Image 1 (tube, helix red, strand yellow):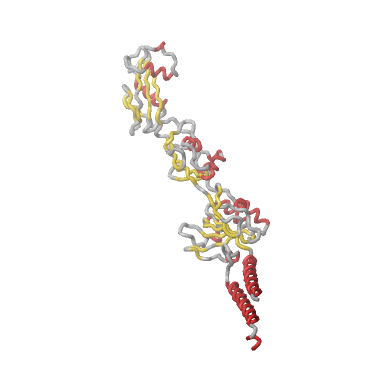
Image 2 (cartoon, rainbow, N blue to C red):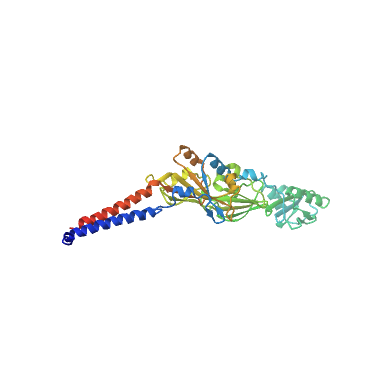
Length: 412
C-alpha cells in the first residue's frame, strides 16, 4: 500500500491502462450491437428476407433473375407496333368534304350563248392550259366563281346550275354534274373544279414540335414522320421523345426513335388523326457499392442491365457483393410469374413491388444481364460484401487501441 502511495506515476499508468481496457470492452459491446457501420443500404440478407414485407396495401416480392424471368420481362415490354395495330391507311382521296374550299370555272365554246359577255372565260381557259396561247378561242366566254366553301348541307352554288352536291364527291364527279345541268342552256360547256382548301382531310400535330397546328393530307399519302417534319420537327432529342397517335378514339404510343429506325412504323395517316410528340426522359438511380451513386439517364426502351452496369462504372471490387445486385421496381402483374401475381396484393395503381436479384458470381447471370430490361425510375442497388462491416469494425477498434496506447506511452 505504501509503495503505491509513494509512486504516483505508476498509479497513473495503471489507471490509464484500466481505462483503455474499459474503452475496448465498451467499444466491442457497442459495435456488436450495431447493425451497420456507415453502410449505404441494407445487406444482401436483409433484401432477400424482404419477401412479404408490407408496402402500403401490397407486399414486396423477391424474384431471382433467370432465363424465365428475363423472357417474361422482354415479352411484357413488347409494346404494340403501329404496323400491327393500325390498319393500313390508303392515301387520302380527292373526295370533297364539308368545309372544303372549291374554285369552279365554266367555259362556254363559241359562239357563247349562256355566258356571252361575262368575263373570266378566257382567263379560266388560259389557267387550265397552263398559260398557253388561247387567241384561237378568244370568242369563248365563261364564268369563274370566287372560292366557295362547301356548306354544311354539302352543296355549292353555280349560276344556271343551281346548288350542286359536292360533299362526298370527287372534283371530276362535280364537274360532270355541273356539265349535265348546263346542257341545253350553254353551248358545249367545259367545267373545271379545283379544291384549293382542304378542311376535311386534316391531321392535328401537338406537343414538343416546332409548330403545333392542323396539317392537310394530300392524295400522295403523307406519313407520320413527314407530318412531324412539316410541323417543324421535335424540340427535344429524338431518342428522348415518344409519339402518340390517336385514331378512332384509341391511343397508340411508340418511341419516336423506333419509328425512325423501322420504316414499317412510319404509317400513312388518316383524316382526323391526332399526333402528339412528348418529351420522355428515361433514368434509373444507382445506389450502394456501385461505381457511381447517381441518377443515370438513358435513351429509350431497350436499355439493358449490362448497359446500366457499364454506365455506372460497374461494381466497387473492394466492397461490393457480387451476389447482391438488386433492381427495385413497381412491376406490372402481367410481367410477373403467375404463381406470384395470382394472389398478390396490388398497390393502388395496380402494381406489385418487386425486387429482382442478380447473382453476378454465376457466369450465366452476365448473359441474363444482356437482356434484362431497365425501365424508367428503376433503382439499381449493390449491397456490401459480408466482411466489409467487419473490416470497418476492426479499423475502428484498431484506431481506438492505438490512440489509448499513445496516451499511456506519453505519460512519463
